[in-house]
Image (tube, rainbow, N blue to C red; front, side):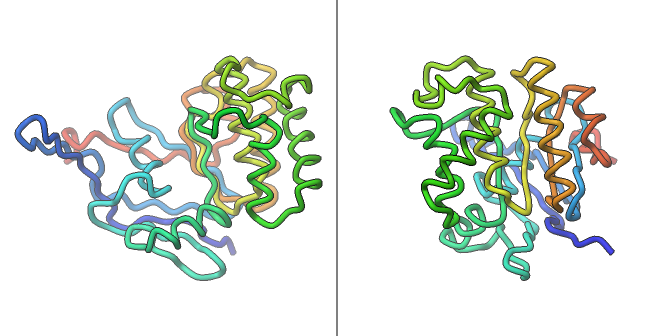
Length: 233
Protein backbone atom coordinates (compact mmCIF):
# COMPACT_ATOMS: atom_id res chain seq x y z
CA UNK A 1 0.00 0.00 0.00
CA UNK A 2 1.49 3.34 -1.06
CA UNK A 3 1.57 6.34 1.25
CA UNK A 4 0.37 9.68 -0.10
CA UNK A 5 2.87 12.40 0.80
CA UNK A 6 1.45 15.47 -0.92
CA UNK A 7 -2.03 16.30 -2.14
CA UNK A 8 -4.16 19.28 -3.06
CA UNK A 9 -7.91 19.68 -2.75
CA UNK A 10 -9.75 22.28 -4.81
CA UNK A 11 -6.64 24.44 -5.15
CA UNK A 12 -7.25 27.69 -7.03
CA UNK A 13 -5.04 30.69 -7.70
CA UNK A 14 -5.49 33.93 -9.58
CA UNK A 15 -3.51 37.14 -9.90
CA UNK A 16 -4.80 40.69 -9.65
CA UNK A 17 -3.22 43.30 -11.92
CA UNK A 18 -3.43 46.41 -9.76
CA UNK A 19 -1.92 48.62 -12.47
CA UNK A 20 -4.62 47.55 -14.91
CA UNK A 21 -7.73 48.55 -12.98
CA UNK A 22 -7.59 45.45 -10.81
CA UNK A 23 -8.02 42.99 -13.66
CA UNK A 24 -8.12 39.43 -12.29
CA UNK A 25 -6.33 36.63 -14.14
CA UNK A 26 -7.34 33.11 -13.06
CA UNK A 27 -4.50 30.59 -13.43
CA UNK A 28 -5.47 27.49 -11.41
CA UNK A 29 -8.96 26.26 -10.65
CA UNK A 30 -9.97 23.33 -8.43
CA UNK A 31 -6.72 21.39 -8.83
CA UNK A 32 -6.79 17.98 -7.13
CA UNK A 33 -3.51 16.08 -7.28
CA UNK A 34 -1.86 13.45 -5.08
CA UNK A 35 1.73 12.17 -5.10
CA UNK A 36 2.74 8.99 -3.30
CA UNK A 37 6.03 8.02 -1.71
CA UNK A 38 8.41 6.68 -4.36
CA UNK A 39 6.44 8.21 -7.22
CA UNK A 40 7.45 10.86 -9.75
CA UNK A 41 4.58 12.82 -11.28
CA UNK A 42 5.36 15.27 -14.10
CA UNK A 43 3.05 18.18 -14.87
CA UNK A 44 1.85 18.31 -18.45
CA UNK A 45 0.08 20.93 -20.54
CA UNK A 46 0.86 23.83 -22.86
CA UNK A 47 2.47 27.08 -21.77
CA UNK A 48 0.13 29.19 -19.68
CA UNK A 49 -1.66 26.36 -17.88
CA UNK A 50 -0.13 27.26 -14.53
CA UNK A 51 2.55 24.61 -14.06
CA UNK A 52 5.04 27.00 -12.44
CA UNK A 53 2.26 28.70 -10.48
CA UNK A 54 1.22 25.33 -9.06
CA UNK A 55 4.80 24.51 -8.03
CA UNK A 56 5.29 27.88 -6.33
CA UNK A 57 1.94 27.56 -4.60
CA UNK A 58 2.86 24.13 -3.27
CA UNK A 59 6.09 25.51 -1.83
CA UNK A 60 4.33 28.50 -0.32
CA UNK A 61 5.89 31.18 -2.51
CA UNK A 62 2.37 31.99 -3.71
CA UNK A 63 -0.55 32.04 -1.30
CA UNK A 64 -3.39 29.76 -2.36
CA UNK A 65 -6.62 31.60 -3.10
CA UNK A 66 -8.89 28.70 -2.19
CA UNK A 67 -8.42 25.03 -1.42
CA UNK A 68 -5.87 23.01 0.54
CA UNK A 69 -2.21 22.01 0.14
CA UNK A 70 -1.69 19.00 2.38
CA UNK A 71 1.83 17.79 3.19
CA UNK A 72 2.64 14.74 5.31
CA UNK A 73 5.04 16.22 7.87
CA UNK A 74 6.20 14.35 10.97
CA UNK A 75 3.52 11.72 10.36
CA UNK A 76 0.69 14.23 10.33
CA UNK A 77 -0.99 16.40 7.70
CA UNK A 78 -0.11 20.08 7.49
CA UNK A 79 -2.18 22.40 5.31
CA UNK A 80 0.35 24.83 3.85
CA UNK A 81 -2.47 26.94 2.41
CA UNK A 82 -3.31 28.07 5.93
CA UNK A 83 -0.16 27.32 7.94
CA UNK A 84 1.71 29.75 10.15
CA UNK A 85 4.86 31.07 8.37
CA UNK A 86 7.09 29.46 11.00
CA UNK A 87 5.51 26.08 10.34
CA UNK A 88 5.96 26.58 6.58
CA UNK A 89 9.68 27.16 7.15
CA UNK A 90 9.87 24.04 9.33
CA UNK A 91 8.17 21.95 6.62
CA UNK A 92 10.59 23.30 4.02
CA UNK A 93 13.59 22.50 6.20
CA UNK A 94 12.55 18.95 7.06
CA UNK A 95 10.02 17.66 4.54
CA UNK A 96 9.54 19.69 1.36
CA UNK A 97 12.50 20.39 -0.92
CA UNK A 98 12.39 22.59 -4.01
CA UNK A 99 14.77 22.87 -6.96
CA UNK A 100 13.91 25.99 -8.91
CA UNK A 101 15.29 26.95 -12.30
CA UNK A 102 17.41 29.72 -10.81
CA UNK A 103 20.02 29.73 -8.07
CA UNK A 104 19.39 32.34 -5.38
CA UNK A 105 22.00 32.30 -2.62
CA UNK A 106 23.92 34.62 -0.34
CA UNK A 107 26.72 36.33 -2.33
CA UNK A 108 30.39 35.47 -1.69
CA UNK A 109 29.61 32.14 -0.01
CA UNK A 110 31.46 29.19 -1.52
CA UNK A 111 29.62 26.59 -3.58
CA UNK A 112 30.62 23.86 -1.14
CA UNK A 113 29.16 25.75 1.82
CA UNK A 114 25.96 26.53 -0.11
CA UNK A 115 25.33 22.85 -0.75
CA UNK A 116 26.45 21.73 2.72
CA UNK A 117 24.04 24.17 4.38
CA UNK A 118 21.10 22.03 3.23
CA UNK A 119 22.43 19.34 5.58
CA UNK A 120 23.64 21.46 8.50
CA UNK A 121 20.18 23.04 8.75
CA UNK A 122 18.87 19.54 9.41
CA UNK A 123 21.41 18.76 12.13
CA UNK A 124 24.28 17.16 10.20
CA UNK A 125 27.74 18.07 11.48
CA UNK A 126 29.62 20.65 9.42
CA UNK A 127 32.44 18.24 8.60
CA UNK A 128 30.11 15.49 7.38
CA UNK A 129 28.00 18.00 5.46
CA UNK A 130 31.05 19.31 3.60
CA UNK A 131 32.15 15.78 2.69
CA UNK A 132 28.71 14.83 1.37
CA UNK A 133 28.40 18.15 -0.48
CA UNK A 134 31.72 17.53 -2.21
CA UNK A 135 30.58 14.05 -3.24
CA UNK A 136 27.25 15.35 -4.59
CA UNK A 137 28.93 18.11 -6.61
CA UNK A 138 31.31 15.58 -8.13
CA UNK A 139 28.37 13.34 -9.06
CA UNK A 140 26.93 16.29 -10.94
CA UNK A 141 30.23 16.80 -12.75
CA UNK A 142 31.08 20.13 -11.16
CA UNK A 143 34.92 20.32 -11.12
CA UNK A 144 36.52 20.45 -7.69
CA UNK A 145 38.38 23.75 -8.33
CA UNK A 146 34.95 25.42 -8.50
CA UNK A 147 33.83 24.17 -5.09
CA UNK A 148 35.64 26.92 -3.19
CA UNK A 149 34.24 29.68 -5.41
CA UNK A 150 30.91 31.53 -5.11
CA UNK A 151 28.62 30.44 -7.97
CA UNK A 152 27.66 33.97 -9.07
CA UNK A 153 30.07 33.88 -12.03
CA UNK A 154 29.32 30.28 -13.04
CA UNK A 155 27.60 29.40 -16.29
CA UNK A 156 23.88 28.71 -16.29
CA UNK A 157 24.47 24.97 -16.41
CA UNK A 158 26.97 25.09 -13.55
CA UNK A 159 24.60 27.13 -11.41
CA UNK A 160 21.82 24.68 -12.12
CA UNK A 161 24.00 21.80 -10.96
CA UNK A 162 24.70 23.66 -7.70
CA UNK A 163 20.95 24.08 -7.27
CA UNK A 164 20.38 20.39 -7.96
CA UNK A 165 23.10 19.36 -5.52
CA UNK A 166 21.53 21.51 -2.80
CA UNK A 167 18.08 20.12 -3.54
CA UNK A 168 18.94 16.43 -3.66
CA UNK A 169 21.44 16.31 -0.81
CA UNK A 170 18.86 17.17 1.82
CA UNK A 171 16.98 13.91 1.41
CA UNK A 172 13.57 15.55 1.80
CA UNK A 173 10.62 13.12 1.70
CA UNK A 174 8.96 15.37 -0.91
CA UNK A 175 10.82 17.10 -3.72
CA UNK A 176 9.58 19.68 -6.24
CA UNK A 177 11.65 19.94 -9.44
CA UNK A 178 11.10 22.93 -11.73
CA UNK A 179 12.85 22.24 -15.06
CA UNK A 180 15.82 20.45 -13.42
CA UNK A 181 17.65 19.77 -16.70
CA UNK A 182 16.82 22.91 -18.70
CA UNK A 183 20.45 24.11 -18.93
CA UNK A 184 22.22 20.76 -18.94
CA UNK A 185 23.95 18.69 -21.60
CA UNK A 186 23.24 14.99 -22.12
CA UNK A 187 25.84 13.71 -19.64
CA UNK A 188 24.59 15.94 -16.86
CA UNK A 189 20.95 15.12 -17.67
CA UNK A 190 21.85 11.45 -17.18
CA UNK A 191 23.32 12.30 -13.77
CA UNK A 192 20.06 13.99 -12.77
CA UNK A 193 18.02 11.03 -13.98
CA UNK A 194 20.15 8.74 -11.79
CA UNK A 195 19.57 10.99 -8.76
CA UNK A 196 15.82 11.00 -9.37
CA UNK A 197 15.73 7.22 -9.68
CA UNK A 198 17.68 6.83 -6.44
CA UNK A 199 15.40 9.27 -4.65
CA UNK A 200 12.33 7.38 -5.84
CA UNK A 201 13.83 4.09 -4.67
CA UNK A 202 14.37 5.69 -1.25
CA UNK A 203 10.67 6.64 -1.10
CA UNK A 204 10.80 10.29 -2.10
CA UNK A 205 7.61 11.72 -3.61
CA UNK A 206 8.55 13.91 -6.58
CA UNK A 207 6.55 16.42 -8.58
CA UNK A 208 8.24 18.00 -11.57
CA UNK A 209 8.06 20.22 -14.61
CA UNK A 210 10.18 18.58 -17.29
CA UNK A 211 10.00 19.73 -20.89
CA UNK A 212 12.95 17.61 -22.02
CA UNK A 213 11.20 14.53 -23.44
CA UNK A 214 13.94 11.91 -22.86
CA UNK A 215 14.34 13.01 -19.23
CA UNK A 216 10.58 13.08 -18.71
CA UNK A 217 10.21 9.59 -20.14
CA UNK A 218 13.02 8.30 -17.94
CA UNK A 219 11.71 9.57 -14.61
CA UNK A 220 7.92 10.00 -14.84
CA UNK A 221 5.62 7.33 -13.44
CA UNK A 222 2.67 9.30 -14.75
CA UNK A 223 1.72 12.71 -16.14
CA UNK A 224 -0.74 15.13 -14.56
CA UNK A 225 -2.51 17.23 -17.16
CA UNK A 226 -3.25 20.90 -16.55
CA UNK A 227 -5.74 22.59 -18.85
CA UNK A 228 -5.96 26.32 -19.61
CA UNK A 229 -8.91 27.71 -17.70
CA UNK A 230 -10.23 29.49 -20.79
CA UNK A 231 -10.53 26.07 -22.48
CA UNK A 232 -11.99 24.21 -19.56
CA UNK A 233 -15.46 22.78 -19.94
